[in-house]
Length: 360
Image 1 (cartoon, rainbow, N blue to C red):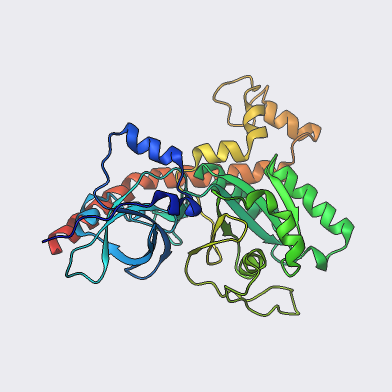
Image 2 (image 1 turned 60 degrees about the vertical axis):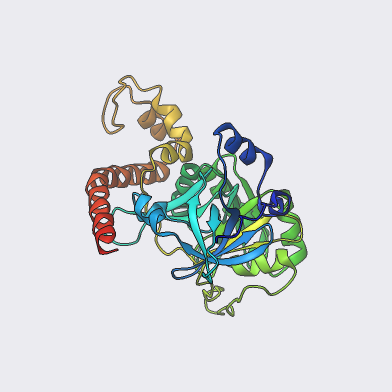
């Protein structure tokens, strides 16, 4: 006989981001949760570590959840809230349902496929970490910002290794970042100085917040999280004297609680940032260009050679940086190409899932 489902301790889950709003959403839907609610804190190969109100458990995906998923991007990731069940003879719990995601941070998977890869779910803030030495790139930052705006989460930019530059050099970099990110907060720090790092990120660290740290390999994400934790929880590589960069050591995404109350996800370095379904994020990330375009004489203006183009006039007058506009056009073209490939990819995913279901 299957034992009764234990009661959910939602109060214990609040420290991992559960809130009354999510409970109200379920009540409004008339949902009855026939299982234990938990949050995925680590994704292993084929297995998940899930934090429940009673502690951490190991789980795998229940068979029909795979059947119901339309694409691999719909399968559970770190940050997801899930419903678990367990049979008496099973060693592992089973994930039977993924609750609705509030925010989704995703990119196109590296390579030729037009498939989305979900990096994290239900995060409140994406912390973009960029080194102020060899890693610094405004154009790459613009790509990151499109991902952030598309995710539905807020953004926060950390410029690490400020101790390796002069005050004037740091100020110049900050100004470039502000042009590229608009009103998003920018913090300059050295992750090796734990006190200053905790002070710079203090507004993000309160209970109920879920942060995900993203950036290139070796920019100091794990070092920064260790500073916030006050302990060496995540392995870090030594810094090379040649370019001031650390060696990438994070291999899986993992969520941990900070002493200040927030939870944070450390993630492997992102070498390639390609967009997928990012129309809204592109408009938000380049809001000043979208605003200028409203003043063009023609509604379908391509901003190339039309008379009365407000965007071209802004470039000519110096009000708009031509390099930023070129970046916008490049990302816009990339998004258009991915959209055309999208239909073909979706059909291929459906075929793959149908074949998987037949094999099972």
